[in-house]
Length: 358
Ligand code: IPM
Ligand code: MN
Image (spheres, protein in one colour):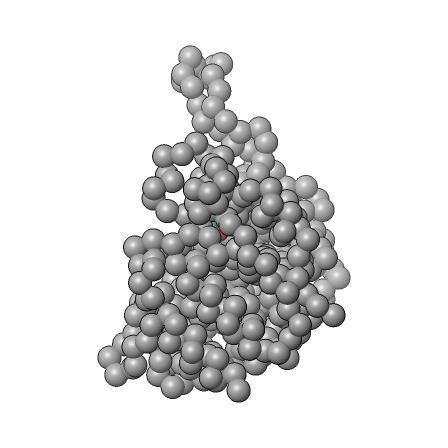
């Protein structure tokens, strides 16, 4: 059966890293039908919208989306609805991609890349499961309004709304438990239930869902403490499940623990395993077009795509093994370069992965 894949390269380094991932996919000998469309700032330039209707249609009608990155400083002054970030938020919402999987893995070959002591991070392998279509990111109402009473009466105020419905918490909790079940059987749910009603509700539901997973050890942690524990003893964690905002922040922190965000893939899935796959890093406009970016996060995202949306685990493993192999060969793009290793460009890294696939 042929699988349809929407390829959305986007801005900055997006096109060059996606190109390498496409080469790798193309070399697997699978029946994949790819179609490319504009997204982000690049789409705004061409179609005056960061997520043009044709791009959205293509994404909806595909089994998976391979996404590069969006964003550039030059769009920062546009009204919010036209900024590149709206493309990714729009895709998440329109496709119902509520489950965001963000692994933070420290490859043994890159143990020195972390700013933390090797003994604290060596062998690190955690998975952050971030809820992606709810929370204060999408809660209504939001905006700017008049203050009717209190010390700031008569002024304007900016406001957003945080909320989570029962189903939203339940389904992401299940994703967290299921993932933990396939790994270290530990799930830590992160919230701020000492302050927020939304979080107390979240905690109660997660506790309820836990009854279906007696084999998984559930713990709860406040988000401020989780931020501390992630740098103190990150290896204590196995799977973390949390809301959209906390997950945004903690996943950046977790990525940095590895010292090589250029290596980390991510998957965003809906209930029918349709997914969007993108590197955890951004568009890096400062190095765009210079053949310097690390394509491995995108290549590994393509592997996640095979695993979760195309039911091709064996092919995913092939890609992951090839990435391991290029690291073992000492090949490094500038972001992970260290004394004694062999510096390669974006396209040379792609060449090496292709060669290692054989
Ligand atoms: C991410 C990004 C996005 C987010 C931005 C670009 C809207 O930071 O994917 O983590 O906040 O979710
Ligand atoms: Mn983020």
